[in-house]
Length: 142
Image 1 (cartoon, rainbow, N blue to C red):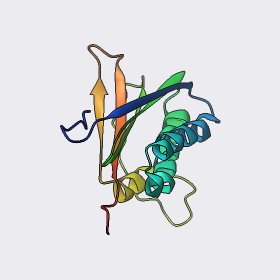
Image 2: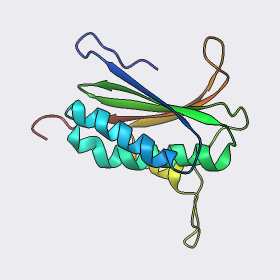
Image 3: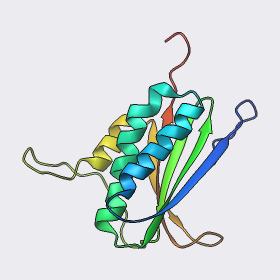
Image 4: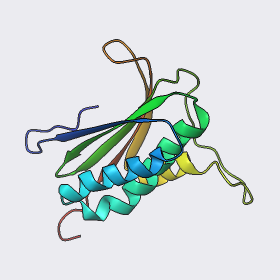
């Protein structure tokens, strides 16, 4: 994941945390603080929602002991990725029924982000998967 361009320097942040029920709150507030510091106030609510959903998926569905949240922040926006050591299937959006209490997270990521995806990790970094999404800042004057 590389969002660096010649006219847009990148600031990178990383949080490693245990995969426990309180981690989604900690992760979403960390990402919000990073975006606030960069002046991306308009991305805060969407970033909080999407970080919470992706991190909650790790906590609820993987059984891994820890996870990492990374953000690459530029003047154009942010790319957030959540790594976990789970090497099982690729997460996919599904359509939740009206009465379902879960199953909407990746659909929200797909709908609210500019782009998103899943990649397998290994080699120089620990094996697992990385779910990422990109949010772009609104252009000035729009």
